[in-house]
Amino acid sequence: MIRPYKLILLILLMFLVALPRFNWRDLPHPLNQLVGEKPFDVEQYEKYVEYFRGNKNLADELEGPFSYRPLVPLLASLLPFEPLTSLNLVNLLFLTLGLIYLIKLLLKLGFIEKEIIIGSVIFIISFPLFYYSTSGYIDASLIGIMLISNYYLMTNRYNLFILSFIIGIFIKETIIILLPVSTVYYLLNEKTKIKFVKILVPIILYFIIVEVIRNFAPQKEIYVWKPSYEILHYNLLRIKTYITFILTLGIPGLLSFYIVITEKRKNIPKEIFYPLLTGILFSILLWLYSLFAAYSDGRQLWTSYVFAVPLTSYLLANWSKRKY
Image (cartoon, rainbow, N blue to C red; front, top):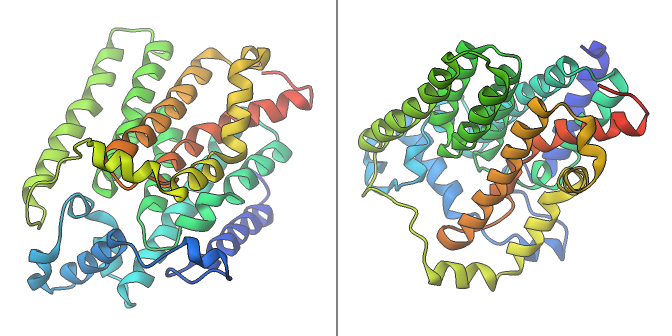
């Protein structure tokens, strides 16, 4: 582990980056013109917090898919603050835990302190952490639990991987990205036939739990992400679609692309490289799907950081002439 005071400094740096957007604060002019009003998503999560605090009359105002994501609003309802503040404090908690587990993973993969700190800073000083982490969305909590799950996956702690993965399902269904990642990981790393059991268990659990949540969540009607030309047309005409994609792709995305298209990928153990690459590719696919079926922005691509930051850390180590 890196020295404790450096870990504390990294956590404080993360809080500092997240602070300007805390509780959907305005940005300086003219940047705030690109932000707009508080999104419907955030308002839904605020109502969900109030619902868990006992206001059952709000059940008729809750809609899917937001009502399929109960854990963060439930935890926020236990805090003695306004709903939006409580949501963002839970987000910061999960992000802090995620950062710690990212550092633990980089340590397990053999990186030295300098490389771990640089990798952590790349994760922290990024557009999605600044823009989305404490604005009322729950994606920051998703990123945190994905970092935890990815650590347990790649350190072969299966029971804890399953536990953290289940927690992630209750945060947001996007945790599904870990299913192809874990499949590739076990195919490459598990030498016995039990690997097929390890692959199937989280898949089965995911679809069972998602179905249970959908049937018990308060909502007006069952929501399905249906692709449509109208949504695609809307997203393609929005400048924020392109700006947030480019800014979220950022350094981790660009360096990961560089690794993939060059010989640098050969310096990374294939049993690590291919699962990480799978996570990045499926994050991109999620963003592409959002163009057709949702309000598309950089949040859908933020999940790639869970895999891109460890991948780019190998490049940093290679530049310092260290081998694995």
